[in-house]
Length: 163
Image (tube, rainbow, N blue to C red; front, side, top):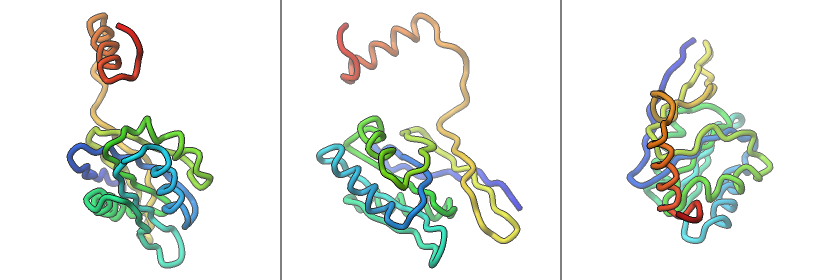
């Protein structure tokens, strides 16, 4: 038995969403949720099947993102895990639609940060995704200048109104 921390690859300008689901139609339903959320979103989806042939089921509309999502899913190789890579949208634009997919049990991360999958492997070689390491260790608590920068940034990118 072992626990691994596996680095995942994010193509330039993309965000990754990792979650757990429960049924073979997940990949098609996630495709529809993404396609209906943001016009022009580019994405690749890979879903690790947990029974039968135990294949990585995959769909997408961007070959680079589809390839990277598939490679990340194969690195994790744990049943019922899905990996989505998106471009031309932010996770905040698609998360509610993804969470509304009936098969989705949970979403573990949605980020552009470096991500590592924490995977447990049992004596029979079966694997489980225990969690993710999203970004870097917390360094402290924000001060007044940090608050000012945060608020300015959110307004600059259009997620909050006003000065």
